[in-house]
Amino acid sequence: MMKRIHFDTIVEAVKNMCIEANYYLPEDIYDALKEGEKREVSAVGKDILKDICLNADIAKQENMPICQDTGTAVVFVKLGQEVYIEGGLLEEAINEGVRLGYKEGYLRKSIVENPLYRKNTGDNTPAIVHYEIVAGDHLELLVAPKGGGSENMSKVYMLTPSQGIDGVKKAVFEAVTLAGPNACLPVVIGIGIGGNFEKCTLLAKKALTRAIGSYHADERMAKLEQELLEEVNNMGIGPQGLGGSVTALAVHIENYPCHIASMPLAINMGCHVNRHAWMRL
Amino acid sequence: MDKIISVPIKKEEAQSLRAGEKLLLSGIIYTARDAAHKRMIEEYEEGIALPLDIENAAIYYAGPAPAKPGHVIGSCGPTTSGRMDSYAPVLMQWGQTMMIGKGLRNTAVIEAMKTYGAVYVTAIGGAGALLSKCVAEMSCIAYEDLGAEAIYKLVVKDFPVIVTIDSLGNNLYDIGQKEYRKGSI
Image 1 (spheres, one colour):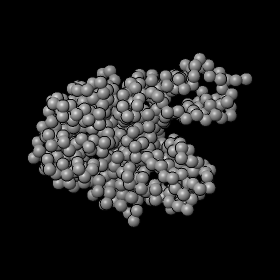
Image 2 (spheres, chains in turn red, yellow):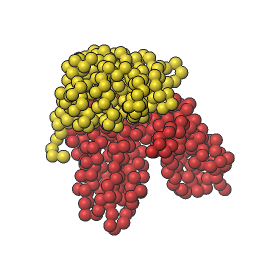
Image 3 (cartoon, chains in turn purple, red):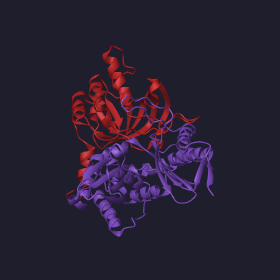
């Protein structure tokens, strides 16, 4: 027996999540920023972290976007294969939800239709949607609006196997140095290792949606996450790149099998407004 | 102690500011991002007057979120300044004295700042809700078709910024990061 989910239900869910994600900073990020404020050694950096927390408080109280860059609407879909969507196409429902959410939530419309000719689409569509077909009769939606500043500072490295863990670390340090003041630090660093050229970028993006404080299931990878976090925070870059000890709030790695010749690495920078909202229908 | 500064700001005063100083800006600033910079300069070269008084102007690299009913402005933090690097030097040559944004600038911009006596200050990237509280009035003065990328005239009160690169070329990004770097990375 298929479970039926109506087009309109999806529209409503996506609309609400676009607004919610942009107004209310997830608790794990907020707590990490608060904790960072205590730990920051630079006086300028401490003040910045305090203002960043205050900013999230204001956005929550006044129901307004935390950041004016309300992002590209990135939507991760897990569609149970026993679900039947009625009343229209899933992707159209997602885009309609984005359209309504960005309009009714007074969110900024930041999407241009042709990257070279740059005419704004006016409603922040199209969303960027990633589908996964899974077992069961549920539809899970995760809306993760992604700002342009930190996205621009993200990198792909086509490493080779001999470069190993040291090669990965070197690349991460290089990416963080380049991201420095531009990426709205402190960041969450999403890392994808393995797969292939396109797979590693998706892994990196997915890594940004993991809760701060969670660990990689593989102990060796969890250890690498911790080492990278510590080493990145020793670089001195600090909040907004103005110097200090809180450069990153977390480093999250997702990995996937890859070709014997390859070791693709993607680093997706997530600014301190690392937003997402999740719903299961 | 934060320094109280009126904007627009004269060259001599801009030149007296030093990297690391915290300022509260009050007065008039203009928003402009890549698209507005590109159009201003192209139109000027075609003989069309600039849409703003560039003499002593403070330009804020920002594209605000729409204002909710009853609000002056939506969230309005800075965008990445580096994208304006190819346009900034000529605007300083024409009289701009302050750039407000976030992030790195290239050598050409820093050289132009030294030549024309301009200052680069940064606001906190991602603190758009907080910064919106410092905007008392907002009006679109040009390029309305660009939406968030249009030029808006903002009347600000105690708008908080940090002097990040001064007109001598002192750069707080370099100074600050060097101070807190540990080890060899």
